[in-house]
Length: 314
Image (cartoon, rainbow, N blue to C red):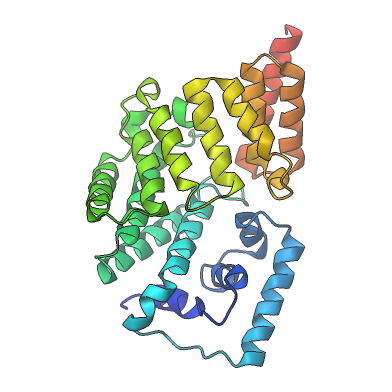
């Protein structure tokens, strides 16, 4: 394959292992993520993920699953898992779930390198191009995502002049080429959403209705609470905070999502915009209690303190 790490990822995505364990196992022992980081990627408690990993290793030994790099004929059957592994490595790099920094550049760069090599191997697969486009369009915003002091900067507040235009242009070109093949998939949709953000000249020119529609289409491929939560934010931007909050409230009882700080943070923001200050403050507190990464924790604390001071007239 020309890339040892990519070869190992293909090897670990063995069909004899259940998908619920082969993805975490690969992230842990090839991607280099900690058990806590892998658990965060799947929105499960760390002890639960630790048990899954132990069971997976036992199954490999008991079933004598061969540790053998697959040939090209095996690539298509394992491609979906490989794409997801690369995506999750990038996600941990883009918004780190541990450590003092919001961004882990090493993981972002590793994921992009793996995506480029995969695109060389499987150039005819539109989802491979879609994934690489997604990574480039998203990573292009990296220079503007934190202040010099390491504080999180929301997308709407970022200096778009600092975005990497070369990555945006390359990602946009890859996306259009992938869409032209006529075989849509989730990574092409994620990339199209990223393109709506990255090619908008200003926050006001962002096509939120298009983004909401793309998330709606994405639900056909990934009917998850995380996708629905993202759709809710887009709906809130297009149709007002009440419409978005109604969607968030409808999924907030999901056991996994209740452990996701970003859900409560999104609810807090929409409640704040609706003037429901006490409920917003409670949602901020819940997000903090779930112990998000340090950069996010500081951001939530600042938002909460500012809102409370404004409410008290301080």
